[in-house]
Image (cartoon, rainbow, N blue to C red; front, side):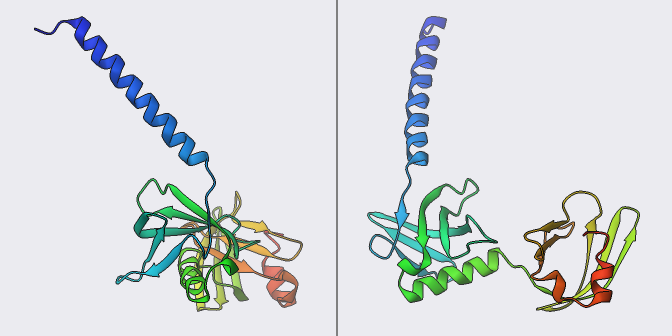
Amino acid sequence: MEGPENNNIDLLNLQEFDEEALKRESEELLEMRFLNGENATFSRTAGGFIALKTGEKEYARVGVYLTFPLTNPEEFISIRESDEKAKEIGMVEKLSQLPQDQQEMLREQIKLRYFMPVITKVLDVKDEYGYAYWNVVTTFGACRFTTQMSGNAVIHLSDSRLLVTDIDGNRYEIPDFYQLGVMERKKLDLFI
């Protein structure tokens, strides 16, 4: 017959086990692992995803994330597990440290994750009820999207480089505001 004392002992043992597991997991997360051509091999899966073999471990699918997507897309690339936790496996310090074919695989994944058309022409921007309705031409063709007027819909990355984020989270880049025509720049006065 189990009494409350036995249940307390079991609960105490369970807490100690969980605490040790948490400690090990924390130590793993804090350990920085650099991946390069000598200790990691990336390959393409049948479904077009990226797999990784490093040491004794194999990952059937990994996620590729940029640490500095706008300023340094070729360095400090985080490779993570593909589940919802996205636990980091390691970091590729420089893409150039990998064989050429593996560099291209990772670049393809980066382009998919960080899809960002460049705005080449601003046809119109209308401000109505706290929203801006954009009609532009991008490197992928004509496009219409909506941004909020308040907040950080348009961010200055430099004196002339702009990042525009629509209400759905899609990003667009204007690499050089001053390369746009005078009338196009006037349409963007709301954001400058």
